[in-house]
Image (cartoon, rainbow, N blue to C red; front, top):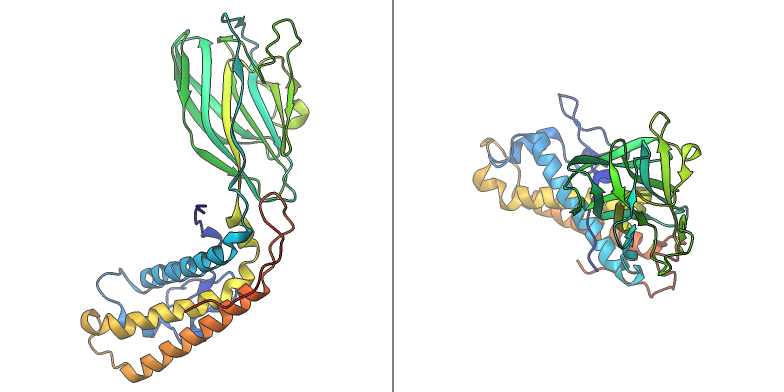
Length: 342
């Protein structure tokens, strides 16, 4: 299973005091706690870095990636399949090109994801439009809870031809309800009828809703003069020539962000380790500050101390970490605890 690493929530977890303000830590912990100061960094940086802050940022990013990857590797057996709904297509084109006149509203599909217990992402893989119109149609991706347009996707269409684009966009639910409305302004655009699902019954009434274990899906319109919110949604018997293919993916990154407080000290000591390794093995030959008098034996002792403290703190985190009560994306079965190998 491939986990995409996105550590934005950890970016400033360790701070650095400098004469120009430095980096204020989200954790309250500064690098000076392990003896890493602006003065020390200024003695060891090389021409590969634009300055102390650039050096700090890159070494901290490396430390964060190392800790996050260690945790992901340890928890791999507890991660369930990345996709709980995969490549699900909504908006089926009817045979014989049944035309729908413009409704002069926003028309499209609402995806109502109830995700209070799970870390799920809505992944929009493709959009199709089948209309009797030539030009560019802006398709909107709207968050109905916040009333915000998340993305505008321009689709170039030719009358009578199915146009398809691949946004490959992901929208995180962040363990709360997510209502995504994919729609376009139908003013002046005649569409070929598309319905939520294929019932193989030409005389049956159209289905306004679909439901699976994770979401409710509805073909819907909103008046052009109304705000984007659920109260303004009206059911529609078609999707206006719009088809959407999406997946629901487990997001193990956001869960990790929710326990970032547990990761502070492993990141701090890993940061100290990579900085001291640099000072000991790379800086002596290429450093900009040639007056540096750092003692190699002392640096070696500091490095060994940082490595030991990292191993101790990392093991403590792994052995006391509990996965969330999320049966969709995590296995709650207890596994044997073990120490990492440094």
